[in-house]
Structures are given as C-alpha cells and as structure tokens.
Amino acid sequence: MARCDQCGNIYDKSFEVKMAEKTYTFDSFECAIQKLAPTCPCCNCRIIGHGVEQDEVIYCCAHCAEEEGATKLVDRA
Image (cartoon, rainbow, N blue to C red; front, top):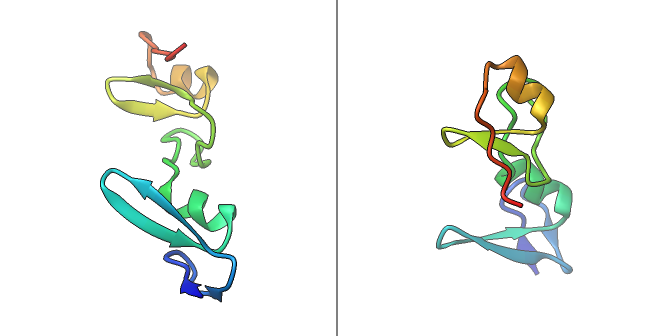
C-alpha cells in the first residue's frame, strides 16, 4: 500500500504517474489531476484535455485564450 502524494490517503489500489523525470503516487485520477494538470489562467479550471497554447501559456479552450488576448494559438493536431 502506498500514500497518495496529493491527499495523503493510504490505498491498496494506488498507481504511479511519471512526469518530467519525477514519479508520483496517487489513489485516484482526481488527485492526479489536482496535482499535475495545469490551470487555465483565464477561468482557473484544470486542463485535462490538450487545450490550446500561445507563448508557452496553456488555456483550456480557444474562448479563454481569446479572452486573455491570445491571437496566435497553437493546437498540436
């Protein structure tokens, strides 16, 4: 059993996620999202899809990017 890096819960069905050379342990996808997903600078929601970006700033959607003044969005299609 392992302890969740987000909430501290000790859980027998925990899992690990490796991101940027670091390994994290979680008890749920919810905790993984809270710890690792970027936050949209416009609406503050967690970005769990691929989002859109400009100048290394990631937004949850084109609407939020435009609200923040982004004009050269990049979608990694």
